[in-house]
Amino acid sequence: MKNLFAFLSVLFACSSAFSQAFNGSIDFNYATQKDTTKNVYIVKDKRVKLDQYSKNGATVEGSFLFDLSINEIKFINPKRKLWGKQKSETPQVIKGQCVVTKGGGTKTIAGVKCTEYTVKNADENTIVTFWICNEHFDFFIPLIKLWNRKDKQSIYFGQIKDLKTGQMPMMSEERQISDGKLLTKLEVTKINKTVPANSALEVPANYTKFEQ
Image: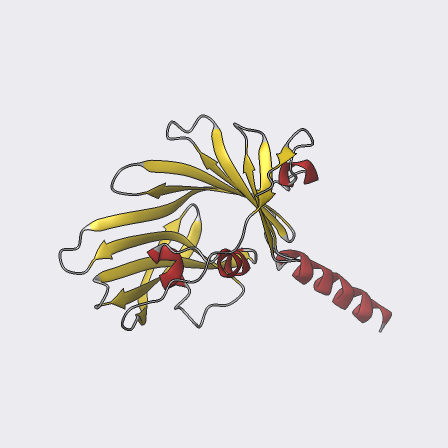
């Protein structure tokens, strides 16, 4: 009996470790009709930093810090060495109806298997195709809900109601329905599971708080 309890304890510990939420960094590119920019999520437990790089990809132009445990957002301006509180945006009103379809196709992106979802809205002449993985990226859905961004990709992602904690798009493409023209594209390029230091998700000590 003792051996059985010992075995179950080890099994439970292995299962818990396997299902642990993601800690590390995720590189992704965001392309519009004008340019493509590099972005990086740095994740540790309930805290996330989003670094947004310059067009040449050499320097961080700005960052956001998300504390999902208290629903707080801060912005960081490296050039001016300022930081401040960032308000969540007001959700955009959707015209017409979004139709969500889960496809049968799969695709491997950045080493992760993904399933196809499409969100289509005829009134807005927009269709967004998402390739969504079933991993342990527990930070992503709470972050999107907290931030309330007004871009179509974020808004349409929120229309997919059957997603579970940890699911996240590895690639998504926004197109016009009328002519298939590609408007925006997001694609994960690298996933690093090295746990970041706490200092990587903090405002630098020499930065000044911006007061409005």
